[in-house]
Length: 401
Image 1 (cartoon, helix red, strand yellow):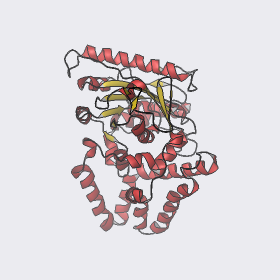
Image 2 (cartoon, helix red, strand yellow):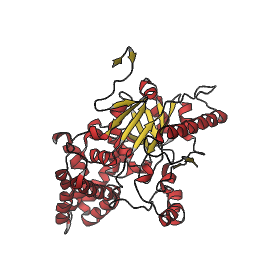
Image 3 (cartoon, one colour):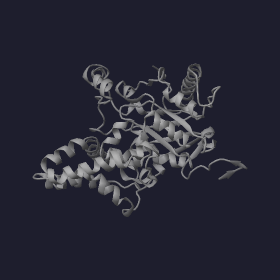
Image 4 (tube, helix red, strand yellow):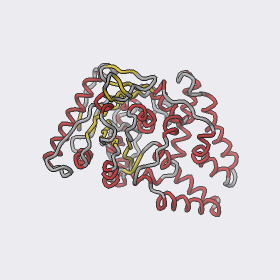
């Protein structure tokens, strides 16, 4: 739209602008779509129920119990209602503790199904593997985004409301032409980066016309259910080749530079990012002429409790070895109820684009990467200092490790 003669996106309905930052609040965005629209994802994402239903005893009773757990949260709370009170909290707890084990435990679930009913589930599993790992690889190209799902799926809307998620986007970023790609670095990762799946539906309104895809670990696209959730919420493989090709096609990227190491080292209430030696995303942006955008996720390190003994187990010994050697992050932590995080507020603040230059376009030198990396770290620190007070974190300091 046009505003005062300047070409810039109009503020979405339900948002507001303050001090040059557009704020989009999850409490006024996203409602359940029509039932017909979501029949396909519901049928697919109910795979655990189907597995139990077509297995031997106690499969059918277990399938019925899982179906009740899947449906009950939707009966307890509707997106048209305030995200407060006992009904909302019970609905969120039931849903999160149903989804996490079923999604990330899907390989175990399929293995059990193949053992119980091999004639049924071995061919189905083989067909899925052939399709997802050979015939259809959108994770290696431009993804498989589903805007309606990212905006209106009940589980995603409930998570956004539970986190009280807000996006604060700088006017400089919103005014940048969508055809000019950016690489957005999001810090910190936190225990579970809960904001990742939640923010995608809001980004359609926060950055209209700009296709933003999040780089995700390759292993996620090998897990049934998790693969589809990632693809529908605009994730692609985090390999250098895929990321570079995406920027070349004009796509913008979001990356969490701290990765699994930052996840394992998360401490409650400690604002620390692993960034001092992580410049790969900076070099990627320079090599494709993309601007760098720092983003800080306030509140992320407060969503789970990590005791001293849990942090010790996460940062050394078996769990740390699993992370270093296999890339599997299994941190110990405590939420408010099982996999449900503590109730707080999560604010993602997107800074202004940093236009890093190199003498030879597309071929940054080591010194140019180092200079751009230092500029980015300084911009991230400045972003944190500028906004920590008004968001309730005035007593904290950001440490770059």
